[in-house]
Image 1 (tube, one colour):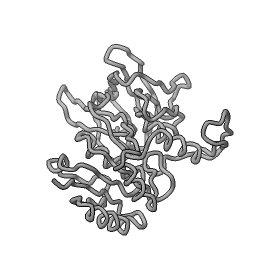
Image 2: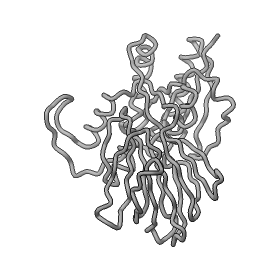
Image 3: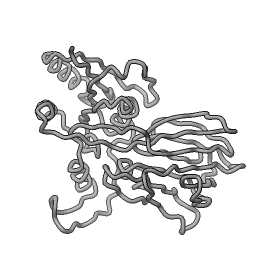
Image 4: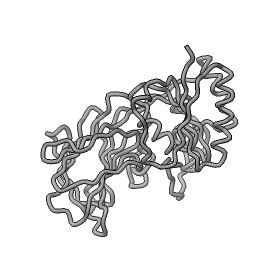
Length: 302
């Protein structure tokens, strides 16, 4: 039986469609059946009923395109081949001109897989579930109005109370997401294959409110204050949004499955760190010099 491949194409990236046609032609010669999905919006709805039919997916874009593909396919265990169109990404690393050789190496068993922790998010309102979702990078709770300061009560596993955060918002990030918004907000950088979660307040009112790393097995419970001065918004991976109301409870925990990436192992991550943060020295060197440049995660969105 022929294997089915799904191409996620960010149509706003230069050369994406040309590369998709090249991949389509080459894989068709090898007997693969190809479907394509053009990403024209971050909130594009995908037919979940057909996604479990694919044996492999290609992501043609930036890290944001990878985030979209991971949310769609991770629960089916479908490996994702991330091709980066643009500057070097933390996840998408294969250059367009390298894809064919890298793909052959993977078929020959010479390229490994990276399995990344994902988050499962549930929003409860008056003891009813009003929203469910998953993400690869992070969840962000923030004010949606002019008055940015909000109050959020945070607990770990519903018994270890961290207290109330007064801040512009709160980030719960995975190790993969540690180099995205959380890093810009002063959070730590974690190895992408660690089992841990980051709780990171955004511009906290008190200097004693610091980022915290907890085991991945914990469930983080966040409650919105009873009378916020502004609207409150929940965002997943910078792409999916959900409005929150007073006293809503947000439950965040490790998802029961992981995102699987081809040719995106730890060496790719550290190479991206050195390049983006202008660290000197080669891999394995004892020291490095930092830069004053502000780093980004390559492509937060699709």
